[in-house]
Structures are given as structure tokens and as C-alpha cells.
Image (cartoon, rainbow over all chains, first blue to last red; front, side, top):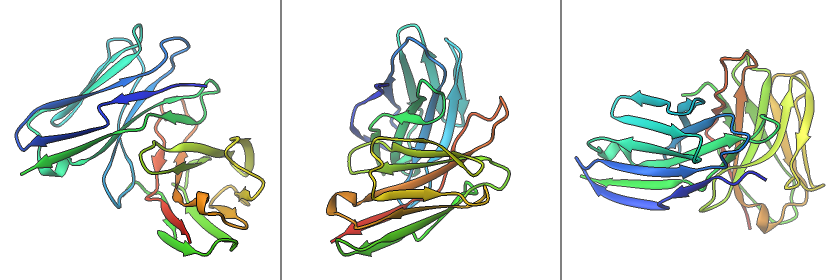
Length: 112
Length: 115
């Protein structure tokens, strides 16, 4: 059974702060790592799919890095805005590469 | 809007009643997934279809749960004789099959409350 863990569980920051979260996953049989942003009452939104060790991806003020050898990924948000408030989920495909196994998420609240 | 829709968005039912949820995936996607999310947890896999074939079911999917995708388009998830423990957010996702289509696109979910 794949074990995907995220930390911290929740985070409160002030508008303008930069922040980062961690996702850890088994480094053996790695296939891909997904990041999603899930705002209340909306669909989870895909942010990144990362596959290669050392991968870095960026979307606006959000970026992510991947270390498959040690089994972790970081998500960074630069200059947090209230609209960044959401739950950030990471996930990795199961051994059959079909379903995703999710971490429990990091809930971010950005205070104006 | 991801292009995946779910209906209803909210459902309140009494214990013992049957409920059915519908998912309409992105039209060209032939893979469809159901997940369940409870408070404080990430989504957990329930079942997966490729076209109309149900290829995998999680151990979470008890005998009271059944899912269909009759023509390889929309899918339904039925829960019979609901229990309070079934209260959760039920999410649907769809995905294409080409090698560059790794992303699963999620609907907004159906939130079920069993009283």
C-alpha cells in the first residue's frame, strides 16, 4: 500500500508571506507525483504532474520541486494572496498506475 | 471549471435509504474514477472504469455500493441501505489514455450526509 504524507496539516500566513509545504512518498517504484489545489465548493484543480528527479515546475507564484531519490516534493507559494487559501493535495499513482493515492492535504489560510 | 460535472452537489438522506450519484466526465476521456473523501483525509480510491468496463474496485467498496458506466460515457454510483459512516464527499475524475495525459480531472463532488 502506497503511503503519501503531507506536512504541515494546516498553515496560517499573512498576505505577502511566502510559504512552502512538503509531500513525502516511497522512493521505490516511483512513477509520478501530482499536486492539486482544492478550494471550498470547487473541483480539485490540477497544478502539476512531475515525473523526473530534479524536476521544477512553475505556475505564476506557485512552484514545485521533486526529489525522487529521497522521496519528497516541495510546493512553494511566493507572496501569498487571500485567493491562495485552499487545501493543497499531493498524490502518486498506485503500483498499477491507475488510481491516485493522496496525502491528507495541507490547508492554507492567507489572512489579508 | 474542469469539464467534469457531478449531480447532485449535496444530498441529505436518512439511514437505510438508497442514493444514486451521477458523474459526467470530459467527453473524450475513456477512464473514469470514483473517490471518497472524509474530513481531514485526502480522497481515497473507490473504483475505476475504462470505457464501460469496471476494472478495479477498492476494498472500501462494500457490497452496498455499486457503480456503472453503461455506455462508456456518464457513470452512476449507488449506495444501498445507507449508513452514517457513508457520510462523505464523493468525487469523480476522468482521464485520457495517451502517454501525455497523466492528469486526472476532478468534478466538484457530491457531499452526502446520512442522518
